[in-house]
Length: 388
Image (cartoon, rainbow, N blue to C red; front, side):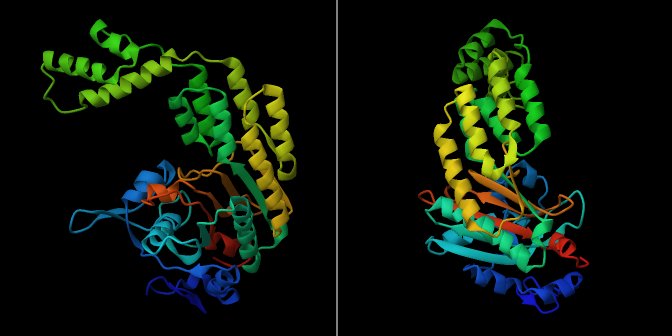
């Protein structure tokens, strides 16, 4: 997966000649080394389960899946973060900065399904503030070295931790918090979820033997009651949903219907999501909202302020750096900082964030912090004036 003088090759594949002049102008591996990262190779063919289990719906529906001769589910590499984390764990798990460049494969609404990415994953660094700031600085420096003028860039920053703290402080039920968390990163999905929250579905009309355990939230008794009803109707052995799945869905409907909407709480959430200010003003805006609403998010705001200061001190920032409370990246493994660097036409050139839960989900025996970013090299070629 080396960088050729006239294009990229990925594990022996033909050179990507569409990027010929772009590749001749910047050696990606040299840039990675300059940023203090060690080059890492990961296979193109990957086990699919880690992506299906941890990456989120946005990526799951775009990957190319196949099956091995032994029945295992495999996929073409749709991104680098998960494969790099798996390779990190397979080595010794010691703190390391891994740099990569190569082809990823996933369906896109526009553009080819095979495209080039490069990036750095910083795994194991316990000084999270410094690592977050360095990741943004690395992304900005890499884009500059690849020929994207700083004046053409703007940085958009969000924070999953602050969002989660607001949801917890509002006292929303776990089910609604989960729905909102899944919608984070899409303004349309968030608005649709808030509308459903403000106008819950009516309580389902249930027969007495099923209604009693459903209203009591007794999952086991509800499953038994549903199974008895299925058996009595002769459907107990039929195909389709089983009693356990029906009970789970029914409990979710009951919980949704019984939730009393709190207009004041929804107004607070909407006010938070509407915050959109320069990063240097974001901590003050969050603090003002905290004081105005009384929400218990002080610890999250303090951590955010420290991170914002570290980012400002890191340098290599575009002229425009904006915090958006509603901004997230549609991958479930992000846990804190999320960011994107966008070109003049609002096209995302680089994106990344913190994923402190991911390595545990992938099998690490203890939590391991991680943060990183990826750069879309085909988009960078256009932004730098090259012909992709």
